[in-house]
Amino acid sequence: MLDNASRPGRLEQDAHRLKAIGDWTLPHYASLRDAVARVHEAESIDLERLGELDTSGAALLVDLLGPDTMLDVDRWAPNLSAERQALLKAVADASRKPLFAPRAPGSGPLAALAALGQTVEQLARQQLQLMAFIGLTLSTLLATLVTPWRWRITSLVAHVQQTGLNAIPIVALLTFLVGAVVAFLGATVLRDFGATIYTVNLVTYSFLREFGVLLAAILLAGRTASAFTAQIGSMKANEEIDALRAQGLDPIELLVLPRVLAMTISLPILTLVGMLSGMLGGALVCALALDISPTQFLNILQRDIPLRHFLVGMVKAPLFAFLVAVIGCLEGFKAKASAQSVGEHTTSSVVQSIFMVILLDALAALYFMEMGW
Image (cartoon, rainbow, N blue to C red; front, side, top):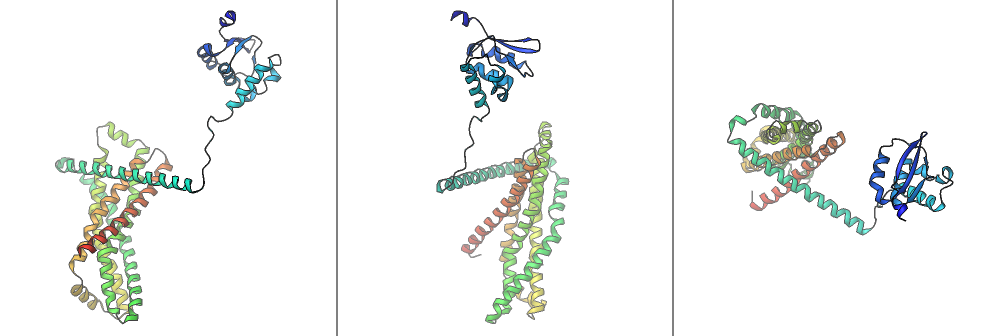
């Protein structure tokens, strides 16, 4: 026993063939591992002078030759004892299988409940990240307001043109068509009651309070929030954001604030355009289908529609703009360095923005209704 213990295992190269010599056991594992790591390729090995062998040594031999070769050990090493052949085959067979078998997806009520819990947890984490990013944006904005030399006027103007001026045609066209559809459907219902004149009130109420700001915000969520995510995500994939931080520049100040302020300026303008275009579409239907002249339309608008409905719609525009811009920028920062990740977060920003806009609009409608506004 003492003689065997004094024979540390080793590898020798003889006539282009490796020889395993000595004891390949756990006490000699470190030196044997280094010796195996120095061997680049080995198609066969001589095991005639192999001493003691345990699973640690067998694992090194399997790593050296590969599990497929070791499974044929009885063919190329017939003189090896049957016990050692069985040990080497067992270790080789085990190395071909994954350590942990993939867990099969469950089914039934418990699996559905677990999936629901994961979705709720993911949504909660998402909202916490959004709240944290909103706080970071607001704190950076407050710090920047007191230092005018840090204002990014050129970037702000460029984003106002991109998010606001370039979006006026599509917003005007969409709200014009929706206004015409609302007037047509309203007139179809009100005609049965002999009250087609109230189509004017229906169109003006709906666009001043809801449709003007809601349609403009949804269009910007699909058009501009996705653009913000793609731009910032591409910069992150190209390590441009890391370069900004390495230069001592704040990405929030350079990339987020100009986009958020531009959206806050652009959406009220687009909301006004949407209101006017929607009412213009309704006035056109009234003139062509209901014999309500544009002059009569304007007189009813001036006489029966209070100013507060216009103010209710305009008050919601900056809040919607801030949320859409912040969500778009946040998803851009969350993107990873791959085109697939940028695409996934771009889709996520659009979905989240539209969801938050509709949710807040519904809450605002309930609040203003309870307040009698």
